[in-house]
Image (tube, rainbow, N blue to C red):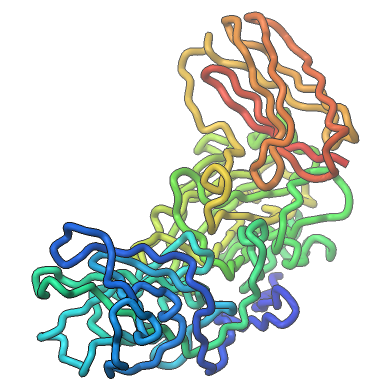
Length: 496
């Protein structure tokens, strides 16, 4: 028996979210409140940077006058001008105090000032427009549009907080006194109810849709235990814990092997768009009690397949950037066994960027495997996180060794860390490489910051038990990185 739940919970009080990933909006005009960046372009001949004095006040772009009337402009006096000139190739970034969203018709309007409203064929002032949710990832929504124009928000960014206007005027079409696109102002037409969050909270999935509950191995008519089938446990920060106790995850359950019925699955949604970056983009945490360096995936092969979407209807199979097992255990592409990382570069490009807002996780564990007891209930999703904005070190850190070293003499055998969880002291056990090497041991917090670091000088072909005192660190989830000249491995650690 399977149950189907289609539900999207509010992420915060006052942040009403609708099904199918549609963030609720209200028809309400919004205007930017601050200028976050103003980079002046060149003169018409390209020989100098700058625009005429009086036309260089970026605050004039905050509220549109929507007027092409000469107010009696006095050179050098910005109070006689109701716009700011970008110069050729110049840009301005405007920030709103509240998110604006997508509604019926035009979502965003750009106003330009050209005295006496000449047509575009005689006065070719053009601009490109970009929008952003976080001020660092930008999606282009308009290209070479002339004077005043409207913009609609795309599927991969149905709400935003920032607008960037970039001059795209052709220099050769103007005389020497021209100064590029003149921004009178910007108006958004819809208020979005999406909740703003601090940078460290942007990476977690906010809610879920289309949770399909599968069964346990022993009986296709039996669901997992009640405390293991709450889909809300896949939303928000992942605990990263494989310690037995009260479940901090949701079990997807297996499919029915004798039918074509869909496997257990869940679709997680991000209110903040996740963008492709160099390396892995999404980290997945799965819970297997007692998970450690000895209990590998070939012993307990819980496998899931991962798909991405921007609209919740069209799906792209993602690529596994890291995972424990060989292909023999995965059984297909786009799959991870237990914890792992995903690459989203294969997502369709929209607005100049590969991105996603939905992550579908489908159980692909082999139900008939002798490695599973009858009570097994498929892939257990603890949570996922991504990096929608640049943070320290490009906003990400490696959780898994992704290097390949054919030279075994240069390798290092890592036996694990214990106890895990720990109150204070942790023992790091490793067999060193075939030559004397220095090892860097770093403790990394969930934000990717190095909070403790120690060095280890070890002789070749030796067994080492390195003791670290974590008493100065607060309780939480950490990663311990062990790195030599040509080898790196990272392990999860829970500190009580």
